[in-house]
Image (cartoon, rainbow, N blue to C red; front, side, top):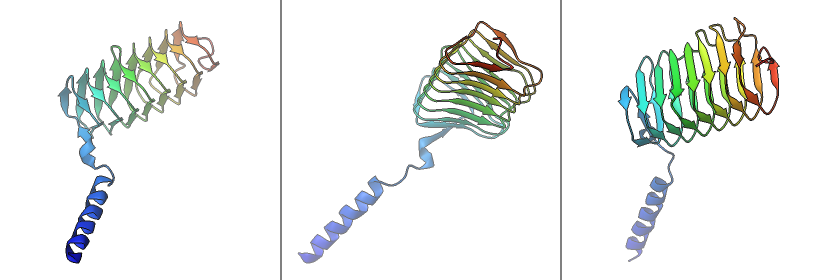
Length: 187
C-alpha cells in the first residue's frame, strides 16, 4: 500500500511538472507562402521567406526575419509586429495590431488603413516608407531612415517624431494629440 502511495505521489508530481512547463516552439507557426482565415499563437516569417496573410488572427506576435517579406491584409494581431533586417513589410486593409509595429534596419514598409494600439516605429530603414490613414494609440516615430518617408492622414494619440531621416519626410493631414516634432513638425 505504501508503495502505491509513493507511486501515485510521484505521478501527480510528474503531471504537475508537465502541465506547468514553459511553452515550446510548437506554439510558433512558421509562415512560408499564403495563410488565410485561421488563428495561430505566434507567427514567424523565416529568413528570406515570403508570407502573405489574408484575414489571419495571430494571438501573440509576428516576427519578420532577415530578408523576409510580410504582406498582412485584414489581420488581427494580439501582440506586436517586429521586423529586423526584413526585405519588405506591408500591413493594410483594416488590420488591427494591439501592440506595436516596429520595423528596424529593413527595406521598404507600408502601413496603411490600420489600427495600432501602441507605437508605429521606423528606424534605420533603407527604402521607401509609408504611413497613411492609420489610427495609432501611441507615437509614430521615424529615426535615421534613408529611403524616403511619407506620412499622410494618420490619427495619432501620442507624438509624431521624425529625426535624422534623409531625404526629409513628406506628409500632411495628420491629427496628432501630442506634439509634432523635428522633421515632421509641419505635418
